[in-house]
Amino acid sequence: MTYDQYINETTALGFLQKGKKVYGEYHGFPMYGIFGGGAKAKMVTMAVSLNRNGGGKLVRDLNKAIKGIGTSS
Image (cartoon, rainbow, N blue to C red; front, side, top):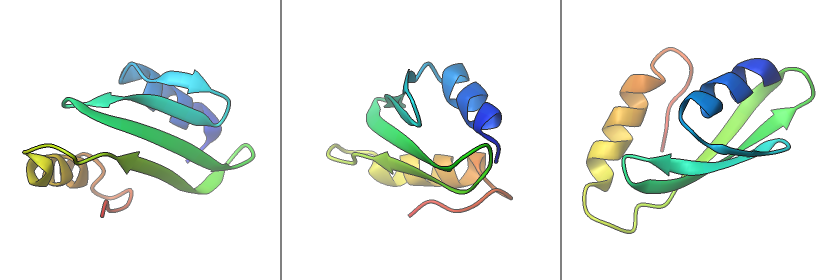
């Protein structure tokens, strides 16, 4: 993934950009992400707080959304 793709995708989700870090909300769950590279990264880390009911559905939705790109855990 390129840095531009990372910014475009997270901006489309309405995330706040702070350099290589992004902060936002997905289906009511707080999330943050870190871009691990310069112009291109082999890994982008997204962390989700699952401290409420429905966490399993969120993980399934995320896995479906990123199919072919990676997996969430």
